[in-house]
Image 1 (tube, helix red, strand yellow):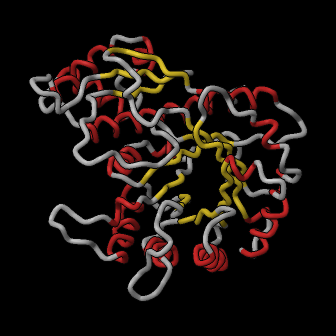
Image 2: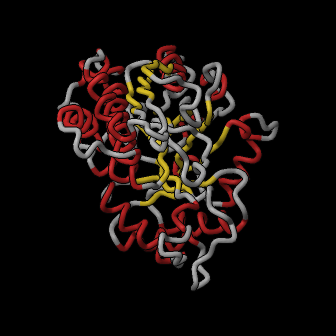
Image 3: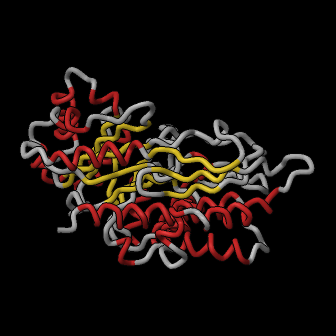
Amino acid sequence: MFDHKHYVPILRWKRAERVALRFLTEQVKSYMTPLIEVTPRSFSPRASGRVPPVDEVLSHIAEDLLASWGTEPIFIDLWLLNPSLSVRNGLHPFIFLAAEARARGVSLIPVTGLDRDDEYQNAVASLNATNDGGVCVRLVRSDLERSALRTDLNRLLSRLHLQERQAHLLVDWQFVQGGCPDWTAALRSFPDLRLWRTLTVASGAFPPDLTRFTLGQHDLPRLDRLAWRRQVALEDPSLRRAAYGDYTIQNPIYSEPPGLANVSASIRYTADEHWVIMRGEGLRNENGPGHAQYPANALLLRRRPEYCVCGPNFSYGDAYIHDKSEHPDPPGNPETWLRAGFNHHMTFVVRQVASLFVT
């Protein structure tokens, strides 16, 4: 399905991420396969107080997948949802979502792991029986430390009626903090890497929030990217080259901000080996500049070399930065600026991976 020249961004299914995907060019999309994490927030009460039925939410997710991504393959993981969540007709949410996606032509590939509950695994096994795209097996860092990893992995494949050639393997280091993961050592845990349908290594180095940064401009190392680059550059002939996956400009550990949080008017911008953080103050600060900080920070960002390398025609996100720096009314909000950051990041990484393998 894809090789090491591919990109797998891990995204939560929220509006900023959805719209960022929608505004990617077709060329960029052809070199990536997103992994979508459906969040509990999708099932929370609406502003009116109404609690939407589970099947209604899942139907909307299927519609949004088609609108934002299209019919190309896409990984879907429901591991963040409460296992007790069920559809009114008794179907597991994964079965219902897959049927809704299939009816719309969406190529959904279910994602599972070693410690999912029985009903989850049964649903994935059922989907595998009717899904030509196979199944994605996602291993996290704690899985790599298991003494019986090989046995547990074989047991899972057997339960799902899968062989390696039918399965996508995603090795997810999750949060990188203080040092880069040694992908070469991690992948040596798998003696049959070349048998898997695809191989991806993923991690994320973006912090949970921006509270550690003072007001102003900051550079934050992309440790996840640097670790993958080092592993690829070694070109160890005994190892299969892995595709690159990351958590874009979000922290790998899922959490929702508290209600009415005083988020900062900040911009996150991806460069070759670091992120540029344009840190503003809280939008709710008394007598503060509020949303007007966004265009001001965008103008400062445009003067930095990282933006000049790309320019307004690089992506939808870059065009948004340029437009708001010149036309600040309206100034945008946290969602629209995250959308721009996501879109720029995914476009940047696709081109970055491609350039690495240009001969």
